Structure formats: C-alpha cells, structure tokens
Image (tube, rainbow, N blue to C red; front, side, top):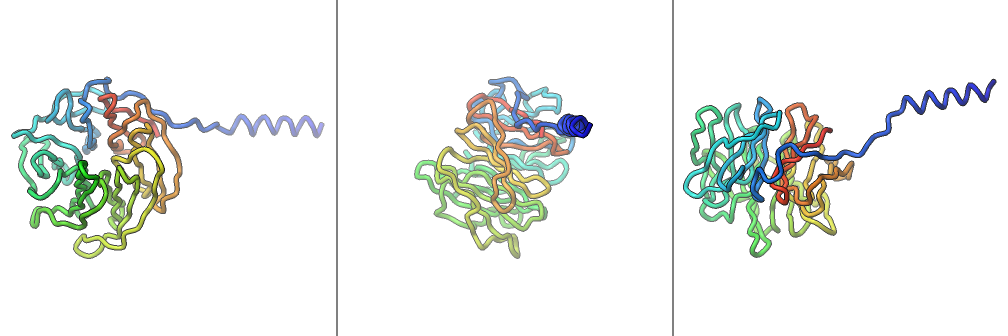
Length: 283
C-alpha cells in the first residue's frame, strides 16, 4: 500500500510540474518587408511598433500589434534613421546618422523637426532616454572601431561625455535612471556608468565581455534586467543588473540589430538585419 501511495504521489507531482520550454522567436512581419538597415524599434503608448527603413532606406515603418505594416513617414534631405525612442505621449526621437541629427517627430501631425544637431558627431546611432527625459546617444566610427558618447538635450544640444571609446552601439538607461549601459560591438564589451548630478556619468565599470560575436541594441525591463542582441550569433541574452547571464533566446535569423517590448512586457520584438523583418518572442 505504501508503494502505491508513493507512486501515485510521484505521478501527481510530475503532472503538476510544467516543463519550461526554451524561448524562441517567430516572424512578426514578412521577411524582406524592411531593408537590411532595419533598426531602432520602439513601441508607442497604443502598442504600435516603429522601426526604420521599411520597404526602402530613409523611411520609418509602423507595425500594428496585429502585424500590419505600413510607411509612417519618409525622412527628408537624405536623412536615414537608426535608433528610435519616445519622450512624451506623441513625441518620437530618431537618430539620423547621415545628417548628424536627433530628429523629433510628432505622431499626430507627422511633423519632422531637428531636435539637436552636432557636426562633429560620427553618426548618431542608438539613443536612450532617462526618466527625466534626458537623451543619451552612441556615436560609433566604424572605419577605425572607435566611438563617442553624448548627452543630448533641447537646451544644450549634444554634450560630449566620453570619446576614444570602442565602437559604441547599444545604449540604455536603467528604469530608476541611476545607471547608463553602453556596449561596444567590435570590442564585445558592455559598460555601466553611474548617472549623477546634471545627468552626467561617472564610475565606468565593465559589466560583461564576450569572446565572440557582436553586440547591438539593448533594452531594460521594469525589474532592471538587460536584454542584449547578439549580432552574428542570432540570440538575445538576458542579464541581471549585476551582469549575471540569466537566459538566452534563440532567434530565426543571425543578425539581430535591436529590440523593443510590448507595453505589458509579455513580448519582445527584434529587428533582423539579415532577414529584413521583425521577429517576436512571447516571454
């Protein structure tokens, strides 16, 4: 009788335990719907996802939560966007790498204006926004694998925080606004800074380094975990605020360029340079 009870208990326990399947992506938009320059996704307050270079270079595409994609705006004067972030409800910021700008776009009127310009910038690449609305921009020089880091505000424009870095690429501010994360693609390092008075940075420390494959876009969840695209490896890694590797998500393509979350953080959308589309992972 004791053996029968033990066996029954084992079956009950086994059936009640769910086997956790590895996270994997599936297509959110059709392959080839974006150019290989697809980058900088961001999610608006209605859950629409925006990414640059839909159908052709120099555009910004809008994808509804149901996956319906269309051109939102076409940038002027040869501008080509990269990173996108949102400030106020209808305020979109776009890193314009060809004309050395941070652009501001009104979601309602679609009016495009120059928020800040810096002629000495290499090419504003990715941007992050702090809770106090300060922007930070990575600025790589791919020809010699160096880069700069900028603080960007309406009042003072671009303010240089650091130069002679590696190929700075992905950038993100922690949810509490106290940390700035910056990665270097060619050097395969992620750095973390303290954000101090006047939105300046100090106390630079290496969070994590890698032996292979590149690094690209990064985003934080509300609990402070950092999602990082591994360009060339075809994965997204999840790091704790202390730099502990928590999980790795397998993607279909091999060149994830950036990512954004749904507003409830139950999905992560990843732009894929090699497939020209957006993949999505249910978290």
